Image 1: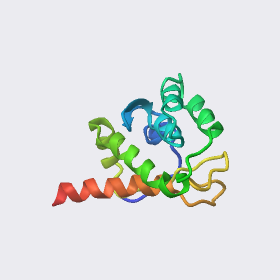
Image 2: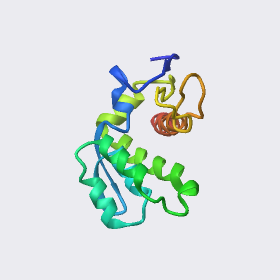
Image 3: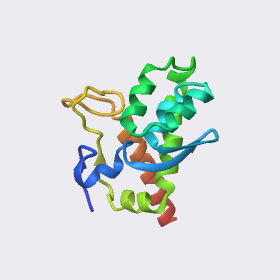
Image 4: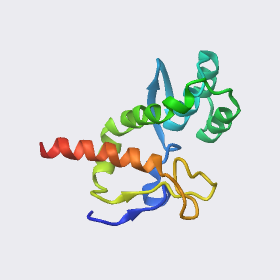
Length: 146
């Protein structure tokens, strides 16, 4: 698909969401979604990480992650951790095929909950999540043409 914009991770593009079921590992613990893994990575406490891994939904994991005391280096490492977790997701055949099928479409994590760091809300935002996903797609597309 050439050009165009994916402006939310809903409907046909729900699979882009960190809430989409997708097993990923982070520092020796297996998580049922990238959201679970990202939220658990906020803390260095392995017991808390395991508890987040066992939560029944990404929403519960997100709420738990919001309540933990973040590790001291969190502002410095959170972008790389998200990229590492997403790289695992999109290395899986199903997700990689879907991602490559987006061609050169711009990917924007549009939201209504005010997240202007990872996404765009009301036309404002840094869209780090979309930018990481497009970076990974670009790397795999280069690999196909190399």
